[in-house]
Length: 165
Image (cartoon, rainbow, N blue to C red; front, side, top):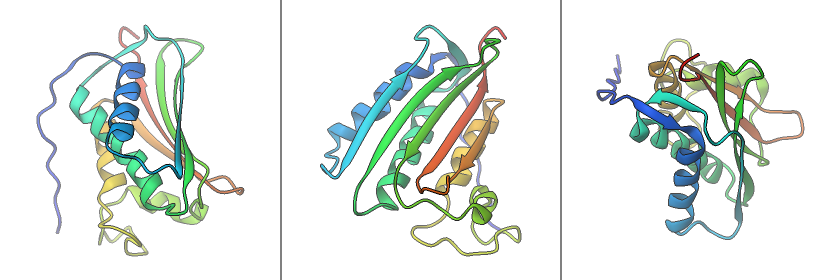
């Protein structure tokens, strides 16, 4: 049985917009190939969550790397932040317009590889990335939602309680 132990969480007020900007800058500064375009759409600069910057940055970077890894021909990667109308939930979305994933496979992508809940082995890579992102979201009292519209692409949304909500 494969176990994954999360590093200790160092909580502090974190602006998701700042973490999204940092993740995009790190990816661009790391020599991102010109086949990939990054777009930022950041709403409500003041909204914060109670979180660990390092873990959140790791989660966003992982989602962007997945877009690059699974779309070798290139794609557009959008990073977006939202605040719910009632100001209780913050959402950070990483969306690409690449090949996408069949909807029937989405539910098992957050399961650890070789879990009895996973019907198919990881296709490209080791299969730990999305399960790790889901666990980071959960450690922040949030969740990871995945969608792959019929037209292709993958949308990964992390939802968190807004600080003070």
